[in-house]
Image 1 (cartoon, rainbow, N blue to C red):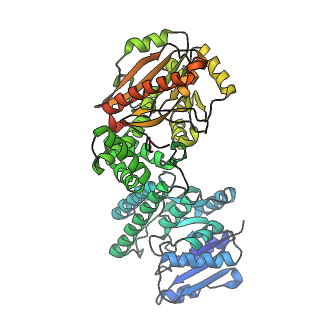
Image 2: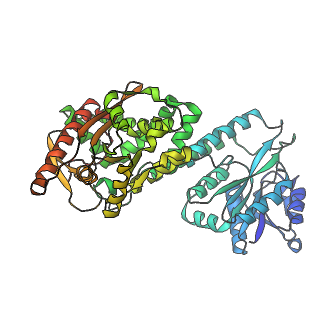
Image 3: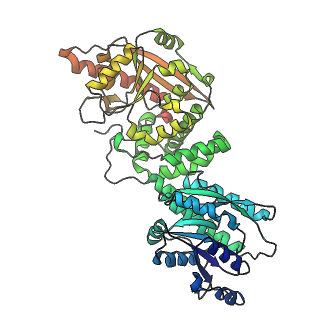
Length: 539
């Protein structure tokens, strides 16, 4: 690790001798970038040039902005063989006593961007304080993270390899927006950010280079670019994906889900949905396959072409479902909010020492019901999941409630070993939860084509084959939102699944058709709670 220092300066020179002395005392070579200063500043800055003492002054003929000056310093440092560069402003606001801590942290985390975390005294102007807070909020949105707690501090240590790669491939703002934009773009590329507390003062005779109108306009345009970039990153979809549900990219990324959860905790559910609406709108406009799937489904339910507004409402319902699940897992929704419409069936199943297969669907919010269950009942559930498709969703659930991941069994195909494991579970009285509205991930062909909303659709035979192998009862479970609360319905499907060898295909067709008819009834009751955003009637 080889470190130097870069000091961009424009109209600030009085504090430079003290700053240079502090940097040299730490053993750092210093590059001072004169950003087109007029006299007397130009002469005072030029007088600091001292190659024998590892202090070099480089002058830009005309003022080009802080970003340009710092980038020029990066170029000089990189060409000279330095791996890291300390950037510090020339106005003397930052306490150099924090430099050893910055360098020590950079030494321990050489791939990270180490930045100051300002601690202001009473000298900070109120307007500047408010402006910084606004930028902080925008950065949290742009990164979908709270990891960057301050993006405006001009005292930091850059890893130059990551910086040079970024600057070779992307344009970064060259004036007052530079500090924030380069940090966000580095963060997007995987550069972690660490903070060190730094005392910051505003000297009484300090000269501000901030142009109220021009720089505010530049900063606003910067945030527009970054938010657009964030949305584009969320909806980017690999080329060559197919229409099978398992091949559709999981469009809610980890940090997107973190952001939704963060917004809920800060503002509450209604405000969070308001904040989410523009993001959902972007998904709606950019996600043509999902939008067309929504239109096809709703049109079949309504018996007429669905409108764009209805399709957008469908998307918003899905966003609300994800949010409600997080609220439930973090204790914000109580068991009283879920009304059990078939208490006798549920109680009978709970009292039965035999296990069971419970078939659910991507309709309504069964995850919420699982979240509000008592611990004893939840412990009886083994949920079969295709985790590749929902890795980020499950990851964020585990972050807030570790028990959210208990008894999740990742499967793409149920082979002999898995079947034996599931048999042992049902013998212990567990319930095996499996989705009945998704076709198998593998190409085993274990599907039946049955009527669904007026046209044949493929359904998996897996739930009925599994229940037959396990020789246990099978139930259907739905949890649908009704106003501010939810209705949980558990209905018996069969005491046992009988698949006689001679009539096996016919029996599977009959069981699948029965399920398709029940799913259609519930889907017609709550069409906007249907969350299969792919062509459900495709081969």
